[in-house]
Each structure stands twice: as C-alpha cells, then as structure tokens.
Length: 233
Image (cartoon, rainbow, N blue to C red):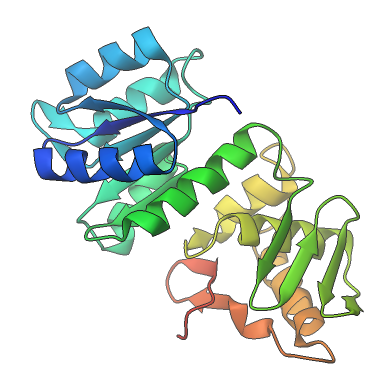
C-alpha cells in the first residue's frame, strides 16, 4: 500500500509532535509547518494527500491559506481538515464555505482525527461510492446500493440512499441545506432547500425499520441544518 502524506500546519510544537506520532503509528508520512508561508511552500513542493490546518497561525489565518489553495486548480482537490478552537456555528460554516472538507475542535482525540483522515482519503480515491459502512448496526453497502440492519434490508429511494451515504461518510458534522443540495443533488441542479427537509423525513421514516430504530442518527441542528451522529443529543 502506498504511504499517504499528511501536512500538519500548526504553530504549537506540542500539537505537531503529538500528531506526527499518531500519524506515523497509523503509517502515514507526516510533514510539518508552523505558518502559512511554509505550509504553502511545502504544499507546492510535496503535494500532500491531505492537510490538517490550524485556524490561527502566525502571519495570517489558516483560512487565508485555505482560500489560496481552493483558488488554485493544482491544489483545489487536496482535502483540508481545519483544526480549530473556534466552536461557534458561524466560524464553522465560514470554514466550510471557503472549502474545508471537515473540521475538528480542540482538544480532540488523535484516534478520532485519524478516522476522519482515512474517511476523507477514501473519498478522494473514489472509494466512497463502493464503501461498506456500519454505524450502530446500520450497514450501507455502496457496491450493492443496499442498506441493512442485521438480515433485514431497508427499503429507500435513490435520493435517500445518496443522503445516507453522504451522511455516513461525513459523521459528526453539521451541514446546511444548501451544502447538502450541492453535495447530494449536485451544484448545477436547482431545487428548493425545503426539498432537503422532505427527503430527510423520508430517510428518517425508512430508518425506523423493523428490527431497530436508527432514525435518531439523523439529527436536526437548530439554525444550521442536519448532521449524522451516533451520539445522544
């Protein structure tokens, strides 16, 4: 298996060192930068597979570097996870709107971050569509395009399947209706945002199931939209 490269951009040595050890244990190659200038130079020279980007950095914010990368055709597709102490919904949405693929709030467990990195890398190599995913006994098989709980197959429409597939690939993260439309329906398809609510209701109904009720995995985030979470509200 080819070793994947992760660029860690954080001005705190202790955090970089902790992440380097966790990444190397998980068999990733780790590059480090403490400011946006060095981070951009390393990105140009090394073309990392994924970037872990701190929000607050010397000489400018991580958001500035993110904007620069997403404007450049060469680096636009490099996935970025924001590392942030900012927890307000406005800050989170700002980062996602600029182009961050995911975010994690400090302090965080290295194992959770590694899991998110692996999930993002599966998406970038085209593995998401065919991946088999399982959460709390709910199994989605991307290859057969079917959803199961135990031996019981759950009947749902193609749009509900795509919604669930997207949610299971991006757990514990809130999405606006507009973001869900772009990701599931496509940026060039025009439908009203309330269409999302209709399909969310259908998906929840399908997940109520026979053997177990998994509808509570699809959570409403007041003032934002929806998220997929195995944690209690």
